[in-house]
Every structure is written in C-alpha cells, then in structure tokens.
Length: 79
Image: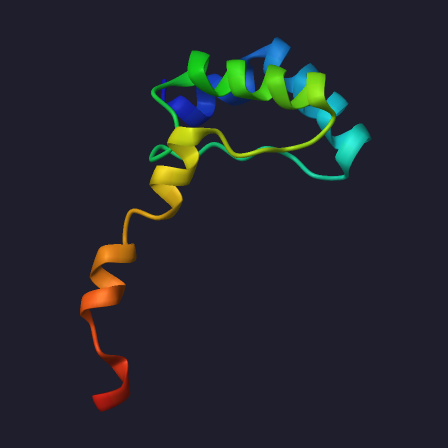
C-alpha cells in the first residue's frame, strides 16, 4: 500500500480533513518532503484542526526554502 492509499484509507484522517475543510475551506495536502510518514502528517493535521487554520511548522519552513541557495547563486538576468 502506498502512502497516499494509506492516507485515503485512514478514517481518522478523513474526519480531520473534513473538519479542517469546514473551518478553512482548504485541505492539508501530503507532501513527502514535509512529513516523515502518515503519523507525522496526521499529527500536523490534528494541530491544524485544533487551531482552526493551516500553519507551517518549522520543518515545513525549511522544506519550503530548500532551494533558496540555488536561486541566489543563479543569475537569471543574463539568461
């Protein structure tokens, strides 16, 4: 079973996704770069439901900025 199949089959995740969607109009999407597995995703989802909003965790910020060093070293004005 793939991770996405496991997420789709997990009833608790489905309920949490519905609650988060009701509160925010958005769903939290799974990204392999941001989570260590299904349980980590589920924990973040629970925290988002408790806060009533989708938020970035410190490790999410690191993943979001993982290519910043490459972009800074690349001069796109000469290409």
